[in-house]
Length: 266
Length: 266
DNA sequence: CATAAACGTTTGCATATATCAAACGAGTTT
DNA sequence: AAACTCGTTTGATATATGCAAACGTTTATG
Image (cartoon, rainbow over all chains, first blue to last red; front, side, top):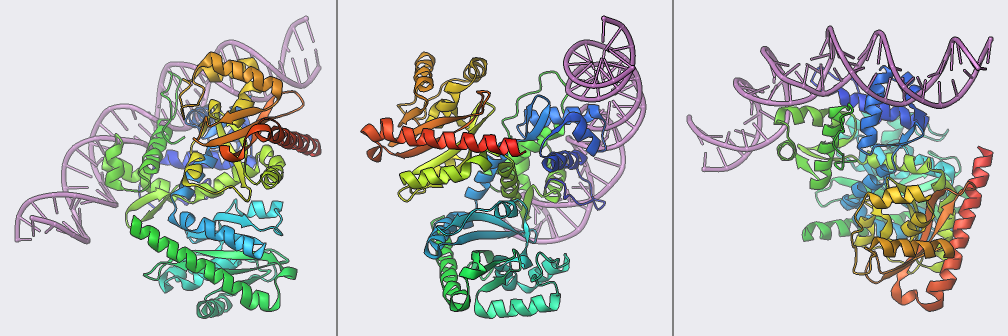
């Protein structure tokens, strides 16, 4: 979405979709742009780009003010719809609020898509402060091996699903503590599976620790994960390795129950 | 966006954009669908729709599982980006949190786009409970005359901007208290302008009242609005007509200051 | 103040490409 | 085993897209 588009592998595709995606990607990257600015970044003439921009504006994907185009705020309303149609969000947001309140820290509800992690919901306890960095983190799907929630999911996927994800990417480092060695990661995941929870010790954000637990459905497949994160100074010893994991797993379990009952009711 | 697309008015457009928009609209409406189901709703053959779906999936707009297509969770991350690039959100979310905390109720930060209201941020105080209805409300841009924040903006737009919005739509009723008469609305807006805040007395949701105030920039133009909403039983008399308006206007003012300083720093 | 440059916009024409039928293989159902 | 459905592919065709070139405005420049 917006630029990450792969090349077509022989099978027929609609090229206009790729062009639209590229144009939206340019606008997203520039944040705002005039026709000329956008056309310079795309392999199309000004005249052609003009027609695209007009249509995209007409359809509500872009706003235009004095010749400056931006992504429309309507993406926010669409996202709201997508979120509300996600059973995991409906089953989990109250529990995540409770987790944030109990711990006083950040709590997250996440899902996996295309091998990456998307944050469905974030709740802040009284000690959790909103930072610019934290906001930006949710603008891009994250790598699963970067954080506790991701590792919790990765550890509990069916082996072939896990392999497909791990094989498709390099394990890049986010901080100096990120696990970048595949064998080491697989060892860790083994432990995560045994424990029922995953830890993140400054592997995603320097100075931040986190605890995550997977959310399963009866047949054993993974729906998502919950996590709690806090500055390392407030998450140490017993609290880090036993108390909080307990609470996080309890939260995950409550969400699993909600998912089941919701499913039963239709 | 997603289906509301107007017909082209003679000037040239990219038809594929409209087709993509229509397909995404169908999937949004169905929530999920197979190729055949989607193709039935669109004036294209199965073969053609198949090519579209493949491309949209490839580009990350759709997910596909066992032949069932859905809107991708990536819309959530894009929305996050759009929100974070909106100066109003950056300047306002902390203040809206404070407003929710001070009043214990719902607080909203909204902006106008294409004559409709989009919620940039919602904060819940300790007494505000999340309802399904409330969640759904944010899935669609709202009419400005339906609520306090919208009326606060509408009242303070430049006359021609206000006229353009009012002329483009019927004043439909959301509840039996919604103002549907244009003359009456214009009178109310006059009062709103004088007072500096707008009231909503069960005009959007039965049993809910709200208070809204506009957010301006130095040159007088409107950037958005803040509002506080609560059950009518908790928002009466002095509190409804004086205390809360005072707090809401104060919040709006703080956000205006934040916007200015942010602008100055670049 | 005139001229040039830059920008958004429109249009004719050539061609790439989106679309339709129709056929295919795989999986279900009868 | 035949008759359905479903997703998928493909050749041929119509047409929508994209380029180049021009236009009218606005903004720089000499």
